[in-house]
Length: 179
Image (cartoon, rainbow, N blue to C red; front, side):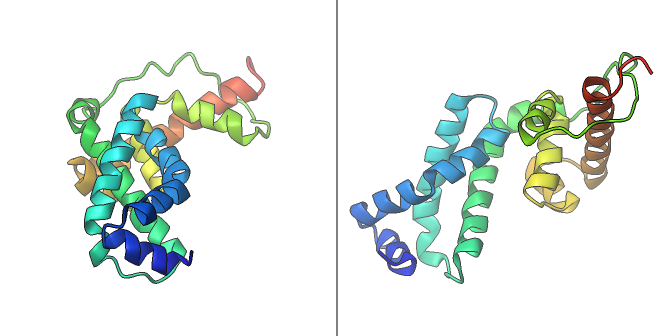
């Protein structure tokens, strides 16, 4: 079925079309929710809630192309996931103190994507969320601040600290430790 037709039928509440729409985008959007959720289960819950909102707002969506649709869907999923975590995030965004002195700085080797993702997952939640929103999903610091209920300066600070910690962690894990 053509995508525009599927969107139209889904927006009219046709269950078969909505099921097709869900099956078409659920895996990609679950991956987005998983990046921000604390657990697999909370990502599933956020995705379900996001799809309820998607179907509710779909009649107002103007289809331009699939890339724009994916961007819109991703934003809804990200916002839902973060909204589910808002109480937790508010406490995480107080300046976090990290004992960084145990990391050695050295030249890094190239690492694969899977290893890089694992290093990002090890970041403190506040750093990780801002880093993912900015680098992976392309949010500006102003948008991050509005979404998370923090100041733009805090968003920039969290991103800078995340980047610095990642560099040190990568140097320690993949560089020449002890030099």
